[in-house]
Image (tube, rainbow, N blue to C red; front, side):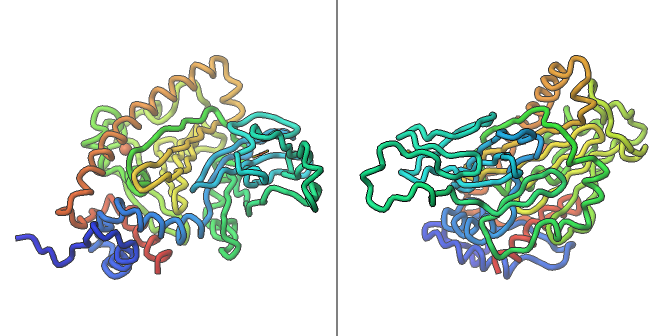
Length: 388
Ligand code: FES
Ligand SMILES: [Fe+2]
């Protein structure tokens, strides 16, 4: 017989009850680790709580400095319902809201280079610092002072070329938190890399399923048995201790494997890679959802854009060295890389979609985690800290 005493009734969607279950039930002993309750992936109320206590109270990756290399360069994205704009003007990189101060239309979409942004609704215009420059026919609006109007600026930090934002004014500097891993970013030349391409796709499931799957290789032998498992057997993967803001999963190359199985044809390995670096791929999570794939010749950095409890947009940047980008035939190399990633992504999308279906069952219960999934437990512990 099933013990139904632990059951959380989803008919009355109670985010606080789910949070209480997470803070009470999650073991502090790695050996006893279990998953979050399945309701944590399927509750609108809990998603709202995550929005308040996690997404709005932590640092979120939005892009890389190579996307705004020149004055006038900009890119935009919508993250946790906030249309944001990152620009480079003569005094540097800044991030701001791109919601028009008039009647809220986002003033620009996509990326490019511009001297000014003109809102498509009534032609109010802004410079790259976010100051309102023009507001046609507003001269009869009493006390309207165009010069004092500026798009809300968003707190941002650049760490090793990665641009992060937060909507919190209280949380500590990210740079201070990431100090112990800065040497790793340096070793892989994060700040000097170039954006080879971007990849955006819909994940029809909760953001945590995307994070957890990225951060463990236990599923390789089933989900990626014809793709990743040969070269990167899940059983060889291992997980270290997590830090205050991150965790790692290491994926070594199979025993006696060739370095060519790790390297990408057409790319040059980064300067300074050791023999061991050339035989490994590392996966890093900077909480809550910055996902980094560290290869000896390319880095992928993703941010998740949770739309609601059931839909997450995956926004991925793939970065390579300037030398790789200058290689002849680089466009074809990038296409091959894209095709390769899409095959793996399709395998993950399929399994996580099935997982979502199962997790909605009233009979689904928290499951146990093995040692290869310790990163899933690390995420649960992070959630616990944020929800307390
Ligand atoms: S909403 Fe932007 S100009 Fe009216
Ligand atoms: Fe996977």
